[in-house]
Image (cartoon, rainbow, N blue to C red; front, top):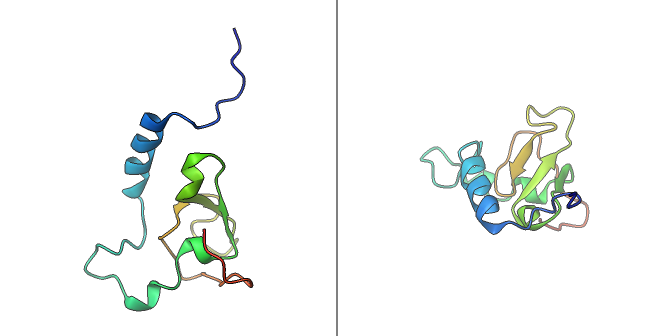
Length: 93
């Protein structure tokens, strides 16, 4: 019996994925070396960050910046890198 494509609506699974992926964050605000200048240069405000669909898309998206080492990888919206480019409309997430 085919159920169709999975839509990401399993909250238990999503919680486990969220916790696992947080270990991959490049710039955590909780680390001692976090710079204040990075606060406004978070992935969720970058023009090259594309949010995932479903509930994981509230916090996670794919980097599409060809020059970034994170290109093609899922990134946390509050993470960041040296290739951050502000969105023209100033939106976040």
